[in-house]
Length: 77
Image 1 (cartoon, rainbow, N blue to C red):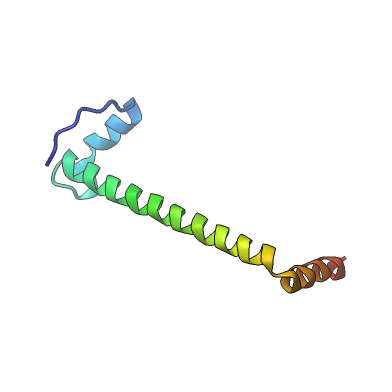
Image 2 (cartoon, rainbow, N blue to C red):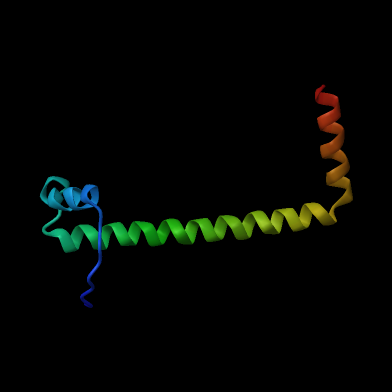
């Protein structure tokens, strides 16, 4: 384990003080859990962006799908 000094705001400090209320043994356990959740969220967002970029690239190259999409938009009116 590595020890780090960080600055947090008052609301975050109050949350850390309630670590037992959330079922954690100590503040470190709560922070480690929160960081794992954040890491998963960041990774998920990176994967979603990559997927969206891939779909956009495929759509850009697929004239038939573009035509179907445009006709569906105009038929909606």
